[in-house]
Length: 305
Ligand SMILES: Nc1ncnc2c1ncn2[C@@H]1O[C@H](COP(=O)(O)OP(=O)(O)OP(=O)(O)O)[C@@H](O)[C@H]1O
Ligand SMILES: [Mg+2]
Image (cartoon, rainbow, N blue to C red):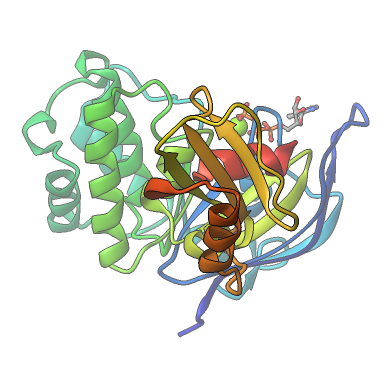
């Protein structure tokens, strides 16, 4: 089996009005990954997903979906994909069961009630199977969209802002459901503005800004690469002014009660005892030392400037 789910090379998209939404995307997504595309409004997330799913026509570049070229081998490529679009659109008067079954039929897949039943149970929709969609809550509607997207047993699921406007509790249950999908072997690609969501769910994160992927890393590597660590020295007596210690980036906090030393997380060779000695020589002796790490949020802001 192909180990790569998605392979994108040199992808550009300029819309008819001349706006360049994608400015050269190269990206490979492995099978079984949960990949989060993180970026601000208008960054190009939906355009990128549209291009992979064959809804947006690229201006240049090549996209392989499970090894199938999504232009020359469109049907096979599309068959491998389930898409939950950003804008939810469902037939309000249809029942959950019918909507999901019909969606499977659209892909030319033979009927499989056992599969649909399993899917609805997995998404906690089984007790709503005969309900008209208009009678469901927003969160349930979103889950129906996921069931529809999975109705034809695709290998890859795209979730474009799956938890926009969803409350915290439901968001957490969606995260759990997505993880459960991953365990069944589905590759999940989601977009989000919520850093917390990317941090919580993804194995790998791609940050997109102005049509370019500014970084693609595993979550841990991202933190390591970009993360700043801080050592907080809680002082016995407040300092009136910042001590001068060459080679160390220091700052004062809380009215001089805390001295903060900032360094890069990937800098392994820093030696805290050296700094302590230098401080001690100036008669500064910390009562306590704490360490802090910058969050993904800080990193994100750093990246998109
Ligand atoms: N059909 C279109 N014609 C012209 N420009 C478009 C079209 N669709 C999108 N754009 C522009 O392309 C850019 C990227 O849009 P896209 O929808 O991909 O962003 P996004 O990252 O999904 O944003 P959001 O987080 O708000 O969903 C935006 O500036 C948008 O206005
Ligand atoms: Mg979007």
